[in-house]
Image 1 (cartoon, helix red, strand yellow):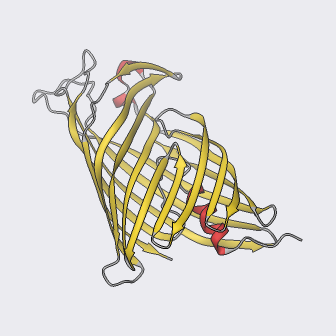
Image 2 (tube, helix red, strand yellow):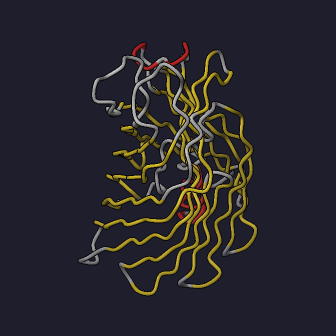
Amino acid sequence: MFRFPSARVVFAAIHGAALTLPVAPLHAQREQVTVRAEALGATSIVVPAGTAGRPDYGQRSLQLTLAHRQVRQQGNTMILLGGLWRAVDADLPQISPRATGANPPSTLHVAHAEVMVLKTLNDRHTVISTLRPGIYGTQFRVEGAAFVDRIVSPRTTLGGGLSYASSYGKLLPIPVLHIVSRPSKRILIDALLPARGEVWWMPRKGLDLGVNAALTGAQYGLPQALQINRADALWLANATVGTQVRWAPNGGKWQLLLDGGTTVLRRLEYARNGETVTDLAPGNVPYLRVGAQKLF
């Protein structure tokens, strides 16, 4: 009879599965509540003909994630629930000319539930599947992922599988590679490629210092007012590299978050029927993220 996975196996599996999909970068299901704000610097863009606004682009976002750690445990299966809401203020070109020539922000929303199922196959292997039904801009769809984790040593877990998500801004099937390794007491390597990769150093309790690379994006359905060149979708994604800090001021369950660096690859394209109709071609800029989270 298969026994339910140990806490170490479950943590490794959840830590990867929760971040398989981009728009919702849940940092493992250790986090019960996370609030995070992000700001990217302004950059020049290619402004479509016939639209209003300055030829520059800025982006800001606010994100809230909630998680309920355990819904049901029976035999070799565990089910977990979560949810995410993310609002992105983007200085997109406007169809209607404005006397000021300003770029009023356009807010794009993502709101989805998350259902995660972990099934133990044996002492070394766990299958993880995730479904995220929700609203992406004006579109309802279900994104998801499935992969298998294998414990290869007492300190390392490796996994691989496939996600169907808009990590790159465009909805695509994406192979994933999951790595969780603890080479020493104070070092943690955690990656779910190509979505993210992190290396953490934990010099003392309540303080974590890290370097990271991340790919965050979504394919947004557009309201009629934002349908430049008859586009019905916006493909938006940012690949970033930077440093990060997690700090628990009182050593408790609440942590303050700080993350900063630069984008290295960006996508900002209007699309119709799955084909690009206008590429705004934003440049790379610095970014800053701040927030707080409560652990279980």
